[in-house]
Image (cartoon, rainbow, N blue to C red):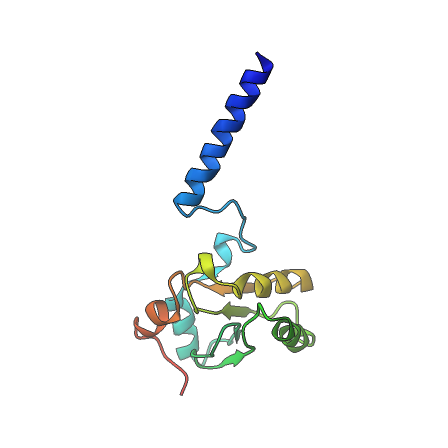
Length: 149
């Protein structure tokens, strides 16, 4: 009986994992919390308001399209993650930092996870990820938010 229960349990578990993969679910937990996602509208409003303290905005993808952002390059490449680490080494751990990529949907992006994880590991307390679930074109440019010259 124990063997049959174990086989049934394994079969059920295998089917569940297969179905989750088929539907695009991931068992991976994201390195950010929901409250660390920043809406494009909120960032655009901050950029436009010169009276507000401006966050450090960092592009960890192929190009910096958002005004006032610093281009690091694709964070999945080792030399660029090192560049990011060096760039942040003199930044206050309290500074508001906004990371973005936008090369592709979040679930496929190779850049946001290593960059966000680096900031957490370095001890930053006020870092956010710009919520671009589809890509920077659809979620920022097409929405009419400001773009860099």
